[in-house]
Image 1: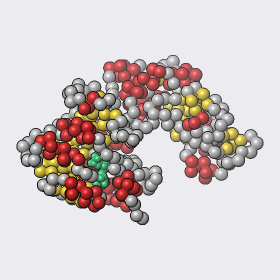
Image 2: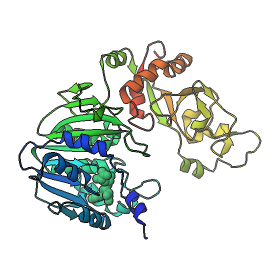
Image 3: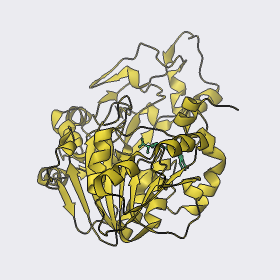
Image 4: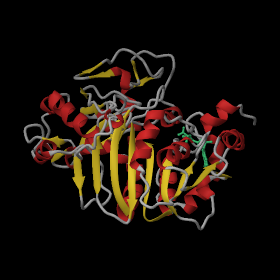
Length: 413
Ligand SMILES: C[S@@+](CC[C@H](N)C(=O)[O-])C[C@H]1O[C@@H](n2cnc3c(N)ncnc32)[C@H](O)[C@@H]1O
């Protein structure tokens, strides 16, 4: 299959770094020795190496690695000839060299088939990546793989400065990566927010120093990162061991201590998936007498379920719903999965079939005041707690975030 250049760039995870962001990151990567070895993996036009030379002079030895021959050719034509440019897949690149500084913007995306997973052209290599990288976990993402490989190429005390999506701070797929980073060095995480034009990604800049310890989280959103004022960390964890990275403070700690984590009181179940519905033989696209719509997130709003509109395009007998998931039959709370870190939930008293969302099933012996729980989880107090901790790190509320919401004794006992 042939790809034009734009398609090729997209399928290789190309996201252009804004100039001001490059400046900010180069400032964070100030060399500690007069003649540093500097690497830009997935260099594209090698804008970080160019900015590094401008900022710190020509005494340093610079290397860029880029997979795409066409991109590399263009870069060679425009860059200082002393910069060494290597055409290679960075994740499979074999080298005994180690670097003082590694800086850049790695490609982002889940490796798999298009259109679901954007990095489809590397999918044949996925097995090899998995074999070589310790932190590969779950669906993973190319940027996690780049981060591990780059950390392994740092000299002792070497510094890495990468811009990354914020998702690794909190998603379970990155648990091994967070532990790996905590074991090998110090993390300074600068939350910068939505800095990529036209790309719906909330980002952080990670400065990682090999051999040191601890984690600091800084809030430098809203362009504060280009003012060059050294910020105070919002969170400081000298004993960091790979836990979630969140904007914790005394208030969020006190709030979490005020109740029992939701995950201890409720099992958080997912709805049956589309393939299960299709295979079940229970659904129809034209309703028969007595059928009900299969509900989706679009049927859910805070404290309310629209039982009439069929957004899924599927109908079935309500009595058959428990054949897909037994909990559909019991009155239970449905929590939205698709609405940012905002928590939106409503009680399903009627036992309808759902194709989406989280479903809270009380654990054995837990008695619940459903009305109080619904009102509490939709309250501004809970929204504020979630936003304070997780901002826009992920496109939707995750199971882990939900499981940690403290439940007050008045809602469940
Ligand atoms: C996110 S862009 C970064 C480009 C540039 N450094 C910037 O910040 O604007 C990613 C670049 O990584 C390259 N790339 C993607 N996968 C790669 C791999 N496995 N090894 C090396 N380069 C890769 C792409 O061809 C693209 O040029």
